[in-house]
Image 1 (cartoon, rainbow, N blue to C red):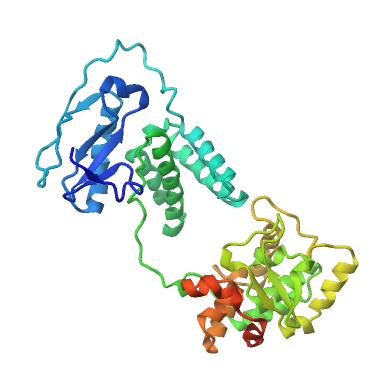
Image 2: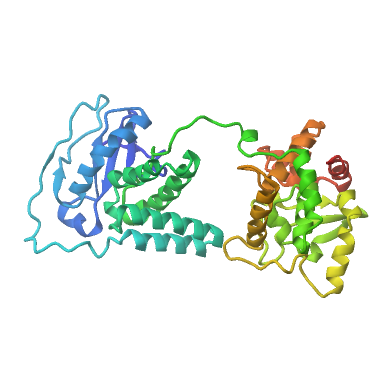
Length: 413
């Protein structure tokens, strides 16, 4: 085999491209069979320079190569990647390696899907890549996968099983294309990890459902200013402090419900002589969505008029450390778990429709400010958006409170 171009092998470990641009499928031989078979992998030309075609053609080829890698057949070793790649690689029966007793269910070195899932989750957790919420979401997805295809040895999870998993959701007809794609992506990351650690094939490439692109501004619903005014009236009648203040804070800061629910009293600071809220990850039980989420928000005059600063003082005098001590911490979603559950019921009472959530307040605020002529950079600095601009994403926190104050005060309902 001539030298291969490994430029995309990290994405597709089971595909290689020759220096002539022809794609090849490959399967790694299990460690215990390499000495007997005299090789560490099998390869076969897919006879195409098109990556997408290669992925599709590999679905049938890889099963045959996998059988060869398990010792069932041998592939002719002298196949060369000629410019035309006209030679067909044909399998031939493998010689008996040893007298075969009753086959064992699986090799000791080939773990089950469930074992790979746990190892993958453990590594992500130890590396700090996944917080409890991500662990819970991924564990649920992996449990669904196991429920559909069974607890197979990981090297037996191939294209037939991957297609069955996707088809399961399509036949149910319960989930959106976007949600199904997220599940397929999570399983793809699992199998990518398994391909590196156990020589498994990642059959998830190319399975995503392709649908029409939606403009980012249309992906989530904003609520009308009339709906916000209705919410503020009803919030004033609530019996608990977090139920009264979270809607007000959401409307006039654009902050996420989790960011507001986890506020400590020392997150209320004075900057440039003006009272502000510091959205940050300063305590072990505080989390932010992204690095750009940390920011300082001047407190809107309507919040001051409503008595927010006096409320903070009362909480301090009562010996509390957090703004809303009645909210209990959840391993899944932090302090935002209980408040999100409450707001789901609250919005139903207000008659809000599908997709109209606490997060909609954020979109309403952003939309209002953009209509009033404020630039995406300073609005992004206020709400903690990543703008896609390297300059702004790197230096966005440098906005002065005096810069942000007129933006905040422009919000009105």
